[in-house]
Length: 168
Image 1 (cartoon, rainbow, N blue to C red):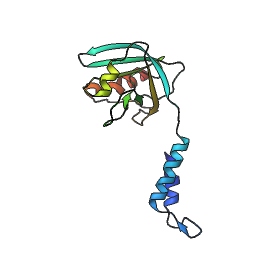
Image 2: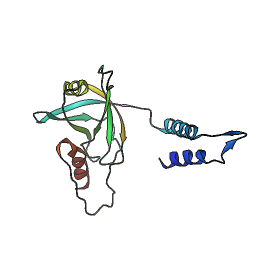
Image 3: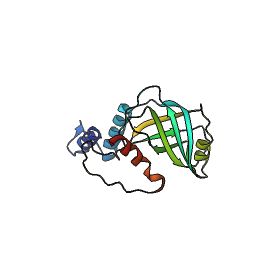
């Protein structure tokens, strides 16, 4: 992100030009976005559903096996892609990672709504595969944090489980 900012900021400077061609703010952003696309990971993980646990009438925990250790920070999220035909909302959703980086599985907890995506996610059976992209996000704790207060409610506590499990 810092390098992205440096590139866009440099190209946005009024005295930056190529011959008689001066860059506009739009072109600076376009160049920055092109850079971000080129350096971002292009792969998607394909993980298998290992377990599904009902936590409340409308909340479930989904546990996936990981073929290798996935590196992420407590508090990050991943984008989950399902085979669902939802032209209005698409076929991917961000879900907070509920498992700790110290655990050998990847877990997500979510409230199941009436959306096509959540209904499809809830219909997954043990052994089904899903595509994931990430990890992403900056809602993470500093490694040297001494005293922390976490305040959340409902399914919004998912990243807190991740953080507590990691640091305790």
